[in-house]
Length: 280
Image (cartoon, rainbow, N blue to C red; front, top):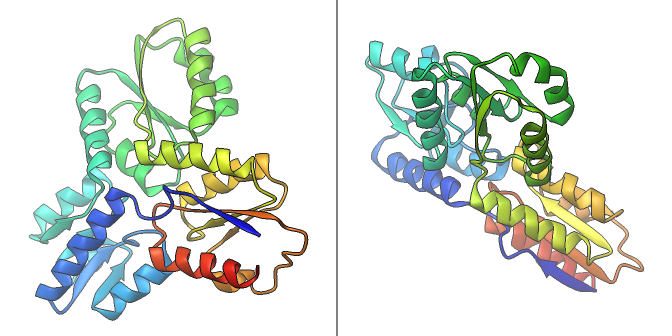
């Protein structure tokens, strides 16, 4: 059995940035609060919790310094923290922060801002909080229902979530260019790491008999890798840890592809690869 491990599998720079800063802070302070999960991986979170990281759901529950997670938060969180003298350690991915700045800048021009992304994803909600007038659109089907109203706007700016599915966004972009009659500018802010990971996943999934995607169940970018794999490989699965492979049948499987989401640690990836090597 041949194993094809994606070169882009595992932590992205934004996640590395968040974990590094959190670990450094935990060395200085006995207890630190984190507003929501720092990242979407239970194994990494458990290790950080054992060092003193405390996950809170609301900024009002803060009892210590508060870490802002990698996905970012809504604008009002910063205002509440300032008002209540809550000290923040902002671990938002730098690329997400730039999107916040862009959304706020465009809104100040009184443009209508459309965010292409998942409506309930923390990153999208954070970005949208900086928008004065606009909406979130998830997919091409929803866009088609909104096109008539969008054409009534004077000027539209379109911004993507960093973890958008590249193929789906390209379909949206094409549709907009063909059907929008008003002034429009499109800002593709899909993270380059996300784009490379998706392209590599597509390539590998076309070459193997079995595709394994590793990542947390809440991870948006991991799920998109799984969606890509399913289109190209009938035997595609998404797992969080190697234990989920123990009862899998690899008989008659000659080539296995392995890819992991941006919040997946090397330890989890190595566990899967080593287990597959033992099954040869």
